Length: 149
Image (cartoon, rainbow, N blue to C red; front, top):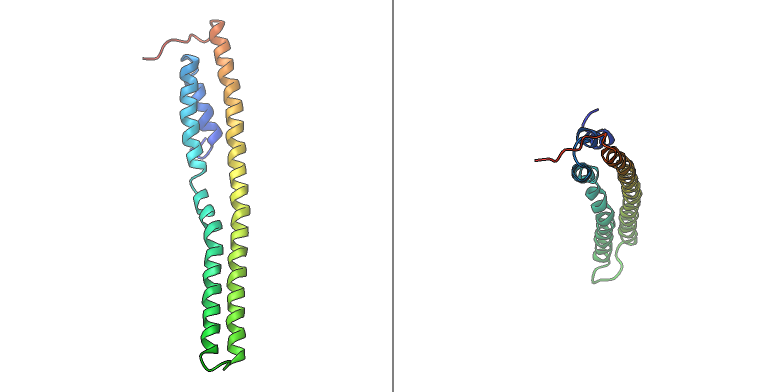
C-alpha cells in the first residue's frame, strides 16, 4: 500500500501499535489522521480561491468594457454606436465567464470537500472500532499491553 492509500496508512499505524496501551494507539492514530486530513485538503485552497476570484475578475472585465464604451461616447456625444455596443458585449461576456468559472469551481470544491469529510468520518469510525477491539483484548489479557517509554 503506497503513501496515497490513506486508509492503509491509517490502519497500519493502529495495527503496528496494537501491543501498546489503548491510549497510545489512539494518540498515534489521531496524529496520523491529522496528517492525512492536511494531505487531503492541500489543494482545496486553490478551488476556494477560484470561487472567490473568478467573479471579481469578471467584474473587472465588466468595468473595463464599460469604461471602453463610455470613452467612445466622449464629450461630443455618441460617435460610434457599434463601438459602444461592442464594449457592452465585452463587459457582459467577462461577467458571464467569471460566473461560469466560479460555479464550476464551487461544484468541484463542494465535491472534494464532501469526499474528504466522508473519508475522514469513515476512518474515525473504523479506527474507533479497531481501538475498541484492542482495548477489549488488553482487558482480557490477550494484548500484552506494556507501557511505552
